[in-house]
Length: 345
Image (cartoon, rainbow, N blue to C red; front, side, top):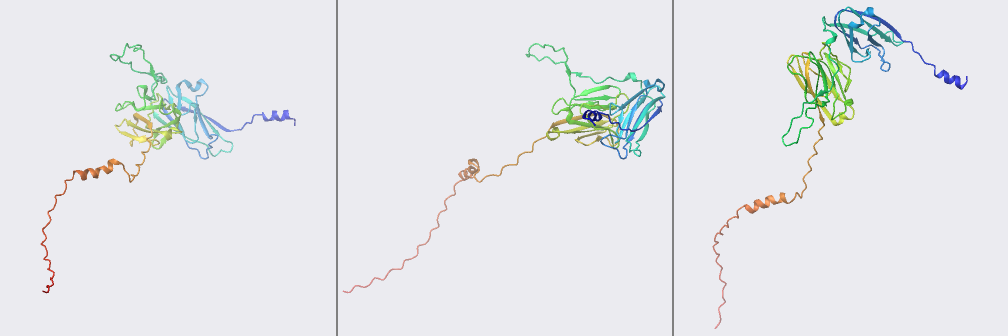
């Protein structure tokens, strides 16, 4: 075989046949949750077996009445456990469910569960658009600071957090502030976190609590986690830092819930949820630098300096001098007289 033929042969596309099956699922009016439980023998590299939810191409299935909201924008459900919300207005309508399996994975068919959450849903026209930067309050004039040039022009402030709140739509807040309204009983349906300072957004990741022991996939900073306008509440959140920021900063977060419960602050990586699994109505995230360990005190040297040695000296100087004690008179001992020899005349 010539080199040209060999090169041409290398360019021949390689096609792998998959086991594919498609199903039309008919749903009545309402809000549904389609859950894919973790598949046995799922392949981390290929992601198979996988399930994809989509709107059928033909008008007979009434695709205009279907809205699918998953944790991925492409409609895929992960073989390692995933879920999606399907909203049907003016049903019945159909959803196209396509299952993909590896050629050798006939025994790894994914298991799907369909749960009906609500019987009635509001019309799709009532949904709120994507979040936009929120205007900052107009600056106030300070006496003696000169003329207030451009005070009436409101400049947009980039929010660190966005949440979709039941009945209100998208609201924003900065780190350290409460996002949502405490005590309002209006639950949060989804949220996104993208710090504008302290740490880069890609060093933050978070999950939504969907049930007891059931968490959404990890979302990277800036990605929306949850749903919008589908009346499905988030039951809590879990957040952590990664990369260099995990070494230099730490985070804590708190939340309030519709049953009046307040939880937190909890440390990074822990789920912030109510024991009753009540919907979350507000939360607060705080990120700050790690505190450096305080240095150990140095051992005192023998020569501690003049200030230390002067103390006892000062005390000695101020101590009154001892009064002289008069000596007791000691009786003189009699000295025996020495005998004087007699002179001879």
